[in-house]
Amino acid sequence: MLILEAMKLTIRDISRLFDVSPKVIYTWIKNEDLPAYRIKEQYRFNQVDVLEWAISKKISFRPDLVHESDTGESASSFVSLVKALETGGVHYHVPSHDKVSVMRAVVALLPLPPDMDREFATQVFLAREEMGSTAIGEGFAIPHSRTPIVFHVDHPLLTLCFLEKPVDFDAIDGLPVHTIFALICPNISSHLDLLSQLGYALHNQIFKRMLKERASRDELLAKIRKIESRIPSLAAEKKKT
Image (cartoon, rainbow, N blue to C red; front, top):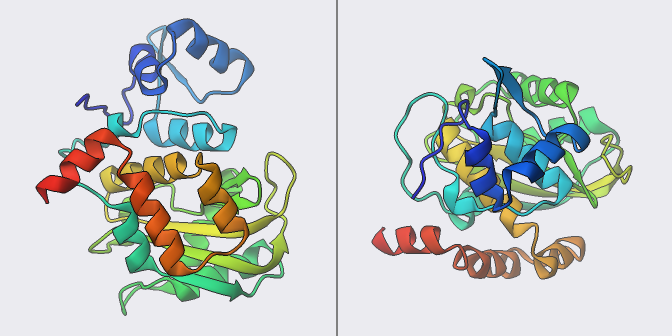
């Protein structure tokens, strides 16, 4: 498996991640606002920024190449999207008036440690929204901390919230958000894993339809298990655990 360092990705790394030619990557930088940095006349990429961009643009990528963090930590063990959602929970009819009230309602539902300051967590999410909307289009948003390590949780968690009514999130397609995936992880490696797997799952049209129809928790988990099994390297890793 290719191990990618989140702050040091090159054009070649990004080409492999998306399975396209370097020429396409240069075109995306110029015309599609692919986040990139210039270091000594060469482009470098932050993997978190790239994944968020790909999810918002609905561009497919290889989740099996997503692993290493910019902190130098070793590649994590298998991080299961199903397990993260089981831990985080699925909630229906979540109160929604505006973006701020949605964030407060979502944070109130997160299974955080008892000593966690929920107001602080809310402000972290809102600060991330100020940097750029986490709405990815079609009524979905993925609020998360820009630096996931601040959340000192033992295990990655993904909390799914279906809002009472859609709320404007300044989405790229202009559509209001009706479904929230709140992502909290103990380190950047697991953050990257879950973000990439969620992005992969949201390319599945059946899964998206189930979300829009607000399928039951058990139905959603069953579908995610099937999707997870289609990622070759992750499926192989799961068999080892």
